[in-house]
Length: 438
Ligand SMILES: [Zn+2]
Image 1 (spheres, rainbow, N blue to C red):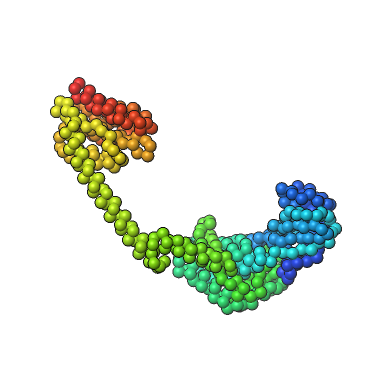
Image 2 (cartoon, rainbow, N blue to C red):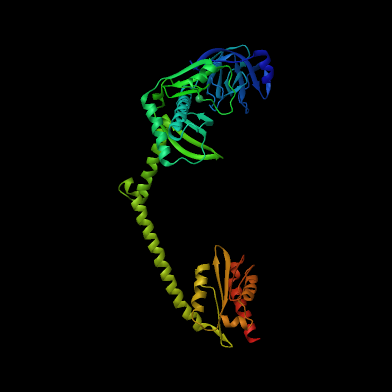
């Protein structure tokens, strides 16, 4: 439908560089992909497109988002939530709130000024950022793309490595110095050749028309740009870089906030610190790092103490286990499922049992994260007698619903049936007994 409209109506004149309101003529309505002359249905799920002969709404282009606002006239109200550029036409997308739209109607437009102001701050800050990057890391940091929204911007540029913390600080300092200087922002439409003479920074790979719009800031920035800007850099208020990251090979991305949103970000960080102060019970945010260090030390000490105690308790249990173990042909068979066992605990048990230097065959089990864990182990001399831990583990693991393996002297397995652990360990012991008696 937009092509048909282009043929009959040509183009939309953009008035938004100098004004945020206008009286215009409605020249096209697009509803459900059809061009219609009239529309009175309120409550469309799909957005409706409205085209005017002239408009102050900026159609999304060059990375700058479209304007929002309202179009009214003859008893109707059309809320615009976005504006797109389609060739020479500017399409306002939104919903009809009341009344009826009709082609030929005289309408009043009103761009949402807060939204527009935030976009102007972010866009002007983008040009200043471009300059600050050149100052900090050099002219090779050419622009590779940008997105400008309400008090938020994203800027992609050519650079092979991440910026250091010091470089990011420097870029931020330069931007805010240029803001504080309050330099004049000027726009001119001129011949491309003249613009190039002025040193306007061309966007990589971009084709420019013979007549171009050039945006200048103080004596530090000259750029080709069709976007909406402030009249003075001071109106940015404040700019805060929030991230620097890679997006492609040799391309980095800086994200930043401007005006009230930049201030909001600082406050969020303050709130976060305030919350940490409460949770960690420190007098001041500046005490936080020391407090965390102390807590980490305490935690490390507590873990060490716990490990020592559990090792001691294992040692006590080992003696009990040996005393209670059955003996077959001079070999102790130790089969058990220790309470609160973990894989580490099982290994600890095995190590301590083997360190007794007596002929021994061991099968141990533990429930770990809802699964069965098994460990078998035999003293060296038993392998020569054909008693292998790697054989025993297969028998035990089968009962615990799993499988595993390992070396003849030591093997581990997992299983899906922790409820069968006791039985699995008993089967392991039976296997040892059978081998030793056989
Ligand atoms: Zn621009």
